[in-house]
Length: 214
Length: 214
Image (cartoon, rainbow over the protein chains, first blue to last red):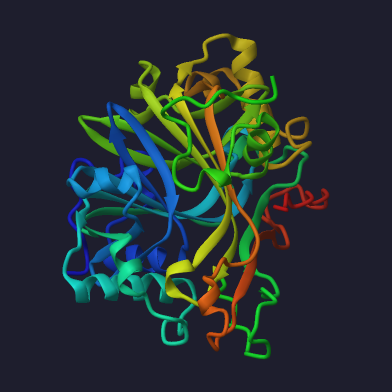
């Protein structure tokens, strides 16, 4: 099924023409972004924390320290919201009111479950490293037992999810088109600069290709 | 007071050496980023949505459509979490375990209140436009009464807030330093590309300077 079914909670009501429930669109945004914002509730207070992740098929994997309050709480199976946003540009209209941003975002609602199966855990950690720098997993020293014990891996099904996308120029009102200011959009791009080696031995190995957005 | 007092909810417990409660640090991150992630709770479910904002002194202003479910809910004074993240780089260690990101983030907890004072509302909208493109407010067509009526402005005090910052190279374990792979960090930067005019009249006005991170 290419389309996810919107639920009352994921159906986009504001500017629904920007919404998509298409799996391919949702997956592409998740695969391009590097950081998600994970929301959860503790004592009635929402918390939103940035963290890395990876998508494998229809699952999003998160990981973190077993010493983390946050992850220990999530392990109990509480509702979360994971939001991923790619900021693509500034939209500068003639009217203050119509200023906007170009962006691609995904919102996933659900309950994250702890992954306990050893193979799935290792696969998730591999996916998270590969997500940041494809090809790196086979180069690095793999996790040892102590590190695996210190790591919690969570899986969130990508089922109740929606994307929202804005592209292109500002949408000024017709009566503002003669207003004497520049109007258009300024594309933004996250670029990788020259890799900085850490100066520890051994030297001379090849620097990675920087992973780049867009 | 240059330092905010951490509360049990904002005191950073994971890697506290990365934490800061310094007002200058917090404000600088808020001023550089363009988008925040706003978390709130509805029927026990957390929601996290990306949105624009601006800081004025010790307040964060958010705005949106009066038709938005989300903002109508927030207007009633419910707890929110606003998180702002600047992604500064990939940290590629020799061990999978020590892979990380360089980042600067701010988390603000509190209750957002609707701004009803006309002057403060207009000042907040000006700050939001100026935040994206400094100097633009005096060039554009200001909001009219209809647009102002259609807009909700919220103020969140920047009081219960913390910053978290990671910079620099990976921190590999000593016994991994001879592992034969490249290690270091790859700086990331959000850059503004050439502005794209929307092709509507009038032509010939000067393009804005793209606002750029870092």
